Image (cartoon, rainbow, N blue to C red):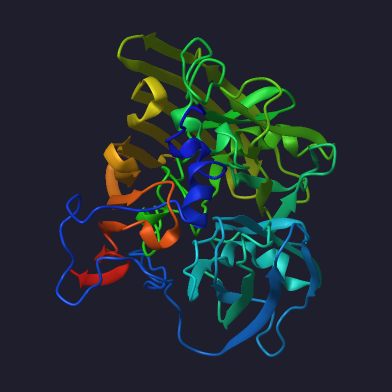
Length: 534
């Protein structure tokens, strides 16, 4: 008898396939009944995907729109085209907003996609799973920081890899536009946006005074690294093993020396945790707008400014050697000293602590893996600019704690995990302290009558505090949370699945610049609540 695999680390290739083909959803007794008039079945249609996140604010005044890509993705053939800057809006903009509009109907998995303009990755996304009758969705993103890329004609490449056949019928029809708002730039965008050469080398402008790397790190591809947070050590009897367990850390190095560390965000795609009925209307945090990890490499500017190529590499600690599954494209953002042809400097501080990564497996009728991981890095340096010597110190501190429990056969499987990523950047007495906390608490069970139920909460939180000479100058707090409870009958045709589910999301952002607070709720694929506070 084939062993069941329940959890979502393999959902894209196992149970989820059964769901799309007819593997069935939940019992009305498992989740509160829907409001009057709402069907107890998800049926052939449900509300189009929505998120509680705020829309991108847009300035007033003249704007110009350019279509960057328009394609119907049915396989793994990239869309290729040419970007031409907008006419009539000049080459300096107060804001640039990207918008993706998509449509899909039928049966389809969640898919991962990217958009490159001139080799620069400006957008990474995933897709919702469609209803048989079809859905539409949209995503907006502020891409003003890539303005340097948009000032000249550029090659465009976009891909949302897809499979369309007799079973998986959903063709992904997407259009991506950029809207340019004419006006004075705010001065925060970089002067140059660079990519690495084919040999992972970077030749920075010799007058660079600030350098930041962006890494759009995602674990994906349908294998265990897509669900890295659920992997266990090789010695544990579980369907997804990975070296020493689930600890992952995205590292960047310059000429072989560690230059930055970060915790990857534990993204849950719209087929995650073996239960697509959790995500039909509300996706998990960041699923449609994957945010890059940023590393301030300014302490290394004195090294990178010598006019020679330097090797910049990204790696993911914790991934077993030889295992694929991570994508880590890199953009380099550079601010230049326009009054000097050459900016010199020096790396003065480099303290890398030992990376600790311990996963303890405890056997029993309930198997358990407890994991703790931590790492510290501090780098500092200076650059001599036209406005004097500027000193930058960057400190980063990572911590991870998780407990993973499951039974024989994995018909009960749960994870409780917390990741923290604290970063401090000090530039001549001005400090920005960012504390990021990600949480995941969920359980999937397969019970009598093949009733599969998933209860899951996710958290994406961040606190940012700016100080100058010890006095607070600005602050903000983000609390982006998701809660879902969905059940269905597995291994039966679609019309017998009896799916029920409730989901909610709340996005709160408040601080010295204002307040935003919105909550969405759904029952059986119907949006039943949309409340704004503040």
